[in-house]
Image (cartoon, rainbow, N blue to C red; front, side):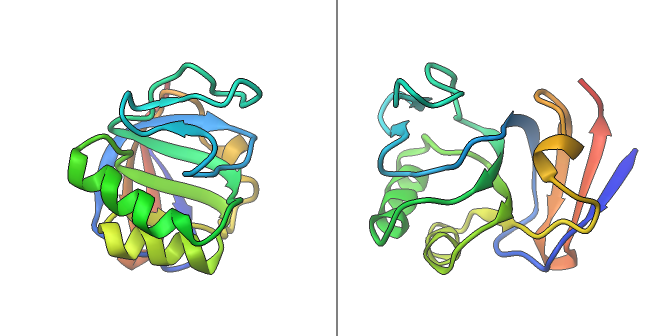
Length: 137
């Protein structure tokens, strides 16, 4: 088991499989929120499902629409289980808090998109600022 320390996060403890990309994230422009897939053709994860995954990405892009989009995604049941970023912004943090989704950023060990592999099983504990890799892909 690998334990990664980060800044104290937001939201409940979460567990699931990582979906990793060294790309940025926009809830508004990158996602098909009905089908649960990355839909922007230029995105590294285009066509892949984010539903019930732990998204591991570089940083956040986008603006104020993020909060209500994350909330709507959570209510519909078509959403990730958690978000891990190298850096997040205040708008993403507000959206995660509103939707009651786990979010962590600023990892002590380096670039989170290199520390976690696509398909790794993770346990995210935002309150403790810890992410555990319990099974490597």
